[in-house]
Length: 254
Image (cartoon, rainbow, N blue to C red; front, top):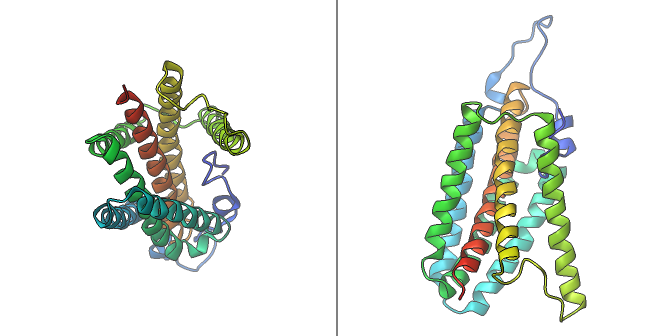
């Protein structure tokens, strides 16, 4: 199975041995040691609770934008490192996934507080938009209104990589040339259009997450892959939330 999700498209899912035996073997299968959809959902809720608790702590801790930015940057860096380690060491996801949720909560809490200072009410709207999008995508996937085909995966992964390259390139040029102004900055029609496009692609990545979790359960992958799957889903939700914050801030500017 070849995943097209940026987080899942690693050897972790393709090379991880499934827990199971053939019908010709006499050894019984212990299904309690295999990945399940329900187990992944439960662990996703645990990660979400950890993230919200961590974000709430930072939200209520300081009103100084500089302090908030320190927490946000620090949380983002540590969270990114934990994702990289988990990608190459999926058996450590049992510990890395909760840690990721906590540090990513620092990032979310700091960024959210800064946005809220500038645009009162934006955070609750971004949260609502994120969860509505999640529920809609889940419903479309569950009832097979949207089917995750290989062509669908290829298009989504290509668009996701293009967005990542664009963001990285814009950041590098901004560091080199102080006068450089990325197209997605500001609240022009083009900038708003880019934000809408990115939100659509982030939403489509949810379908890849759902599909990968289903396939992982079907292949009876090890139990720790539930944490890995939950972590991948959380990464997409965080990305989607940040993009909603960006879009709503653009729409709220004069």
